[in-house]
Length: 214
Image 1: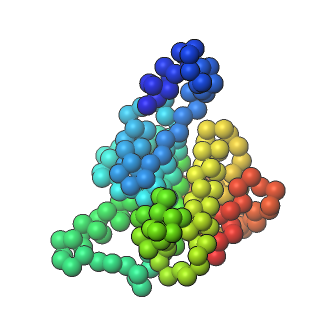
Image 2: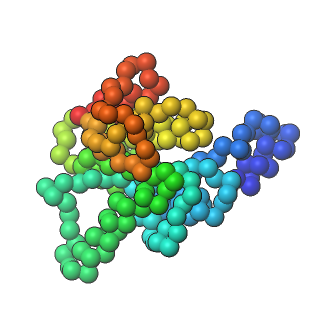
C-alpha cells in the first residue's frame, strides 16, 4: 500500500500528485487487520506508528520488540458478561489470546493500551453504530441508544490522539496523563508521565470525547 501511495504521489495525472507526506506513515487495523498492522510495522521501516484495534497478535511479537510507537485498543469484559468456551481446550486458547492481546503493548517503544469497558469485538467497527447490528456491536449491559456513537467517539479520540502525537508531534491530552480509568476507558502506558494527578480535558482540546462517556 505504501508503494502504491509513493507511486500516486509521483504521477501527475491523479488527485494525490505531490500531496502525500510519506515521511509520516501510520497503520491501523481491526481484528486480523490489527495483527497485520503490527507485522507491517515490524517489517517496513517507512511505518512510524502502529495501532491495533482488538486484534489478536498471533505471536507476531513473541520473539521481538516493535521499535516504534504501538497502541492497542481492546475490549475489557467483566465476569458478568464473559462468555467462556464449553471445553477446556477452548478455554485455554481464549486465555492465551487474551493474555497476549493484553500484554503486547509492552513491546512498543513506547506502548499504550486502552481498554474499553464491556466492549465486544465488533464494537470496534461500524456495527457499533448501525441499528440493525446493535446486538452484535453494542457494548454489554447498556440500554442507551446513543451508546454506540459515544463509544466510537471515545475510540476515535484515542486513535486521533495517538497518530497526532507520533506522526505530527502534537501534544495529546489523552495520552499525556497517568495510567488510570477515564470514563469507559482504562489507559495503560510504558511512556513516562510526570503529571501527579489526572488532568481534566477542556472543550478547547481538539478531541475531548474520551472523557465524556461514563
